[in-house]
Image (cartoon, rainbow, N blue to C red; front, side, top):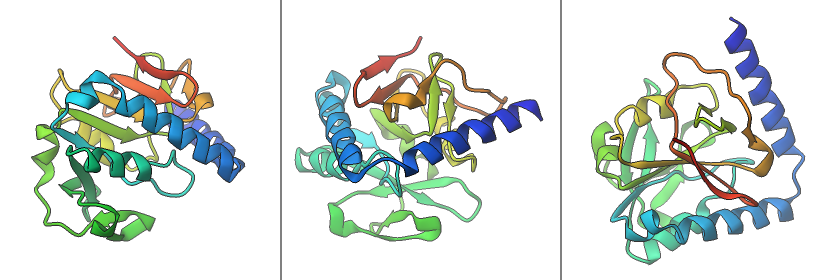
Length: 193
């Protein structure tokens, strides 16, 4: 129970901190993250990127998704399934999204299946904290742990964070999936071994 309590506390602290950020701070963070990711060689060369449409106070991904799509990258975005797992469909610009369950944005394109993430060259994952080993703390639903379990070991998986969310330690449970890197507005990309 200790790890679950620690995870809940860390998640609550991160979400509370996000809620106090000013709109201009969030906008500057989004621009910095977008620029960092668009300049990464793996992202520049990627034919397919699995990403997500940010919600609430998450680091904003709208500009990033649009820029990837405009430069010809095939962008997959998740569709939350009733069992909490993720299906994937193509992002075809901002008009290709509609409101979905739990405040999420869903693609209007046909779903391509849970294993569509396996075709991605780079995977971007939401997180509220990541430690220096790549242990990722999400919102607690386990959707991304299931999706990341399908991603091959050579694929770059990147969590998008605000600066204080790259931490020394995140409690881990057996089902938790690590990411191979984290991007922060000030620190750029941190890769984990």
